[in-house]
Amino acid sequence: MILKEPYAFKSLKLLNNQHTVTNINKYIAIDYVYLKEKIKIQLKPFTDTHMTLNPVVLLGLSDIEKDIPMFNHPIINLEHNWIALDLRNYVRLNETKSDYEVKNEAEYAFAIQRFILSGMWFVNKQSSVYGLKLGHFAFATWLSDNLTRKFGLDLNNQLQLKILALIYYAHLFVDKFDQDELSKLIIRAKEDVLIPRLLEEVYEKCGELETIDDFCRACYDVTGNIRLKDLDYTVLTNVLANNWIGTTGKEITLLSLEHPPTWLALVYTSITQRSYKKTFIATVVDRLNKRGKGDEFLNTLVTITRDYKLGD
Image 1: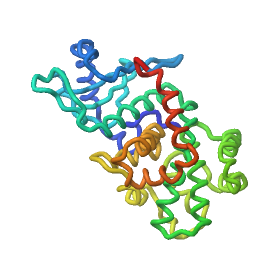
Image 2: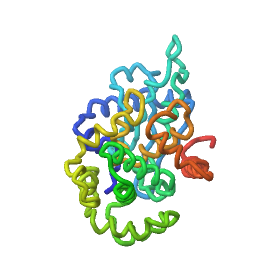
Image 3: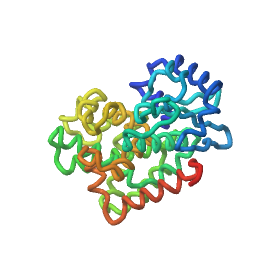
Image 4: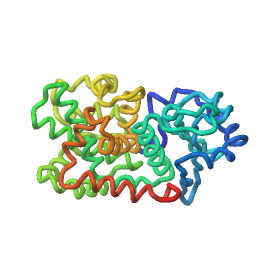
């Protein structure tokens, strides 16, 4: 099932963003039209045949922004057709607050890349994002490696969980995962000679995989290993908590379990930013980054996102 926006995620949807939305609308109406030309990254609207989302960037250059609480994830408002990106944590204003410089290049780049992918995702560009194949296999390896290490599983269980995670990740791109989607996944995974046969076997055992809770339940159903009997979201949270760094590292890691744009931004950052190289996620990506797979991922990412950047 497609999670369309970050604040629909289970641990975020209880947050009340109405005050934030109201003040962003005020910021757009009064100041944003004059401040847009000062923003160093110029982004185009996200569109499909049904909607247009206009990008709104917060940098702290307006007094009105003082009334907007900082937020960690893109906020989408369909009533006024905008998607907002908060970069205030990653920039430093000059003395007159008329200009800014980037103070954290890595997190700044991550936030922009995730924002673009999130906007594309919301306007139904899932098929383009699915083309980032390294992200798919990195996701499956990441989850299976974490669970194998935590619960002391054997190689057979590790492979079963990797295949389950491949299936689960594919579920995140469609509202209904059926036999046709399974056939597409088998074609995608054909480079691993063990997977085509086992994919169908795991698929028959796992049942519906609508949410990360379903994935946790299916880990026991697929492996039959009693150590995974009580695996749930809370336990998985503890397993993954330290897989990324930064003030919002844990929150972003957990969101990536159901929101592919967030996960793919983590993969992108793992490849491009040295400061994250020692995180668990980056070590997984680095291990899979062979025979040009990382370059292929980055080239595809550039191709699918270039239309949303002015001047690219």
